[in-house]
Length: 307
Image 1: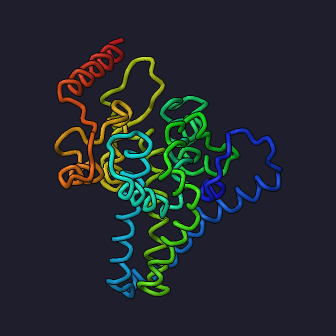
Image 2: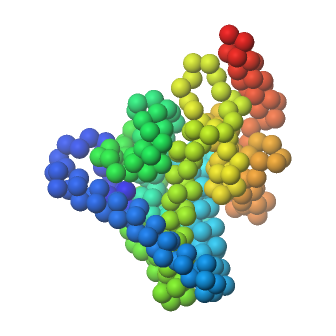
Image 3: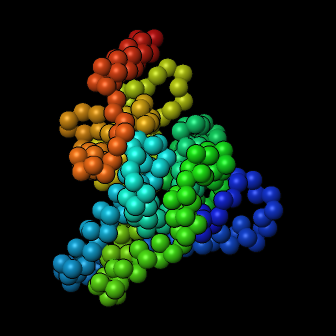
């Protein structure tokens, strides 16, 4: 994570990387993962005592929303899957907001996620629960495997906006931590920066772990190793990303919530951008295609159950 945050385009191979450098990166990544957790536990005490101010909670809510949308709309649907197009300024804003999550540089995030789709729930998947639930959630971050943008994000490597934000990722991440402090002081930093990063981290990682373990698989196909699920709780917390089986069935779809009751804040955001003229070429899956795919999956599940 730390190397990715610095925007370095490192391949999966560890050739040329000393054991000391690998261990330092693992230690720094562990710190980035654990420190927000400790801060959240510390922040919970005044909250339970009724001492947290509305300003603190407003900072938490607003920065959580902005950062989450940066990850889901910016890093995921716009950058990785090209679910819609927009102008360079809006593109940069979404990527910067995604970088506030401290989940690495945009180009590395896209490469890892594309690799996940190519090798979903096989030994080559970077974060599959077939190894363990812990590995899928956070353990994969502490390993030595690196992103491979030259293999899994070739198109993005040619995008000057993506590469600029990726190369300067460290400073955008710092900005995301400093702004709540400038607005709310140390309590603003605690809630708007540390607690916010903790929540965004674990909600995002829940898509890797929970949404490949618990939930429904309406598009499950026989012989497909993919374990992605639709999970209502993650769908609500992760701005629509929890409709993960839907997403694996139609990766380029701008909407992950394919039914009216599947709340998808990220999809609604893209729709609004479209109506404002700020998003174009929005990828939508025809209803008849969704129905055919769902019926095909249901028939195969029925056949498996009968067997």
